[in-house]
Image 1 (tube, rainbow, N blue to C red):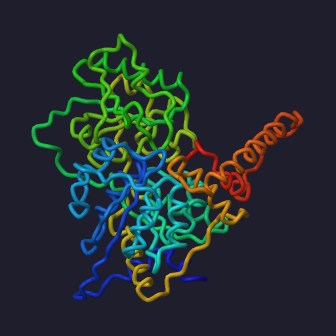
Image 2 (cartoon, rainbow, N blue to C red):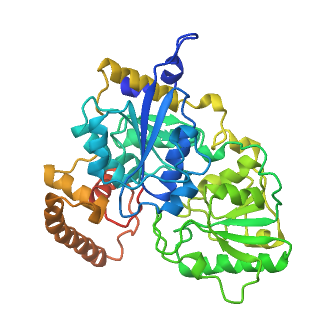
Length: 467
């Protein structure tokens, strides 16, 4: 078994800690972020890094890059080592500009906190062009259960893949192994699931906060039903502000695309105490008497603060709703519970395996430190990609164009798009014809294999789940 595989036991990081009295070597770590949720996760994960790490954060220009307002909200309460980025977020840089900076002054490690296709492009560029390349750390923000092959597939070249619960690590390790990817998973307490102590002084708790999600539920009628339940709650409890907490204003991008924004669905005759507001979730939770959502990571922020919460199950429990992890958590409820003001308290037996493990279990920083020492010694080994597609430079240009859109201004990218777009259209048409021609007796749902998932993910269809 390779050294990288041995790392995934979770013990290597703790064994690698510096002996007492030995000052650690100063490290320089650069974070790369793009969308709203990845910006928030990346900045706050770095804020939990060891004190001897010098930190820097860069925003990558992509079709879904967060706006300055989104970045200011995402960067609230970050560590001072990152500078005043909550007041003056870094201007987006092209991938080429980011790589040029890393080439000019290679850091010890890079946290690639970007959506999957962009993360894949960035890691490939760093591996190909940065001398004494830095340790590559990546991961997923928020709730990542059940495990998704695309998350593994697009980040297979990361030296370390950060997750946030023992349950997630088990699931992703199993999925990666089944797909032929050597596990590299590490554990970190979700930055937003840490206790923050007392709320701001003088703040009155008077709000029920609904944490909106861009694609859960996906259908317009379902989202209108949610708004209706919130309006009913506001009418039933005039003493509360019922807040639809949104993540993007009109024209702003998000990690996942939002087709039916909640702000557009609030009826004109809604009660006056039903309001739509943006801003940092932490500020809303300071005022919250309760939080309601379908499956937003904000529910974990609420639990960490001791705020009662409910995850609505009226639409069922499924992978697409990202709410399977909450089964038996004590947080499940219905619209009737919401309107009646009945909110849940998390069960202690659920917490240890799901995002609220003991802080001593976190091994991501120790293992990153161990990888940086391997880099010092010249023994850091590149991890193989999961992608098995052919095409060489043209294929890489196609993936880059797919990930960056018009932010890729390379000639080869335009050529790849001209060649690849009609080919993809033909493939889609063929698949549609095959579905139509399938005999009625043929089962609609076939067993899902990792190999099939790999073939699907190699298409990297723009606009699909960006994990």
